Length: 584
Image 1 (cartoon, helix red, strand yellow):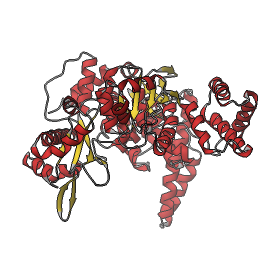
Image 2 (cartoon, one colour):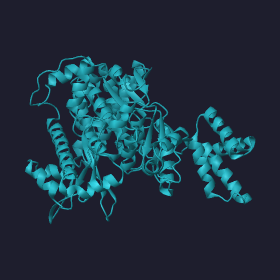
Image 3 (tube, rainbow, N blue to C red):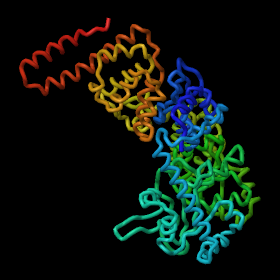
Image 4 (tube, rainbow, N blue to C red):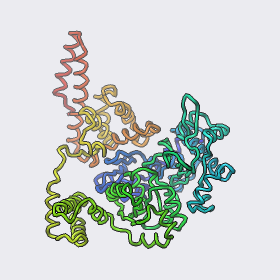
């Protein structure tokens, strides 16, 4: 059951996209649009654009884009129907009766069914832990000091030794094989179907809206891997979720604590540290850092104290800083992880160490010492060079860099003036990229230095951007360009919709359900980040060039294919006329 299309359109028209997104992102007006730091990836220079005239948003850094409902879906990780309900609540608009039709109905049906399947699986695992067969799992949790109320709070469960118990249970509840396959909870092969999780303690993974989106499992006894997560599914994306965030966001503390594993988070919450989360067995990602930025501006890294933990912390530090989250480091030695520290030394010891968490960059400089023999002048010089490099690449702001040069010189007993000169030389060696980034290139394209679009694609993108920005130009373009003359598939779909004077948000509805095409359409309709500020004469000249380019390209292609002499003569005449084509 879904809300009528008419209501969706009315709700969208009532919403001021700048006001709605402004509740989540700090926006500043620049030209016709508003800009701010993107909430979907870490950045220091605003590339997130909101166009009130088109009622759409687009990030020129990461490529996320869409209408106001799409923003709520992405930011809150909720379904389309839930976004409609959220927006209606914010605008105090009463919801109509649900109907059985609507855009993306099949997609939403499937998503809701998968969520129901995951919830039923979580109930099954939880009941299994409390059954006679769950004794091994219950024994393991008690040995780790996990109390009964904590088991209930986190919904912990158990998968027994049988390889198909969950499959048989969910089949009995009416779930079809196609959905079971897509849930990621089973392995399908020629031999049959088996449960992904067996003989493991189960940790349900919930999103920030308290919905089960995946599972983690810790093997009981011998077996590899020790920890196993759900694979990537329609619901579960490890790169954009954090274990425990559904509870940690309620703590409303100025900082969060990032751990490596499920048990660390659960032990910390049980001990009163309700602001702990974990990164689901993967290295911290930009999306996770951006997610953390929604709730805190400071993060304490509580990774294991072994070499792997140190490496993981070093990888996480620049990601957090780029996202605008200030990282600190927790010293767990001689304990391996927070869980061990709590069990052996008690919560007060952890609380004291948290109060002394070290500035991440100064920690990084200190740990760098272990790579050099400081008794050897050559080793000492190599260490100073490494410190200078760290300072030169880590801070773009001159004042911030100066503060850290002074702090490092003081702590490491290095002459301040010599260190400052070393950093300046290092900074001067940083050469610009041979291929500077273009506005609108994705992050991956900017990093690789590639330009993914051809010249004809850029021409057509410019056409769509201008027509969406300046609808008065549509009759001119419509007169001289046929959709079939456009090489880009999505441009071919958008062009006639613009000619029908459909607003950008309505055009995007045509692409809902296909994430890649939706974001490509949002990119085309958003145009250039600086907007279209040229005067009428310049725009007309630009449109003239675009029309000529598109028509000439198609004529040239036809000339290459044509063998009839009379038709070729006619095509050559058209080609010659286009060379002198003018709109005025």
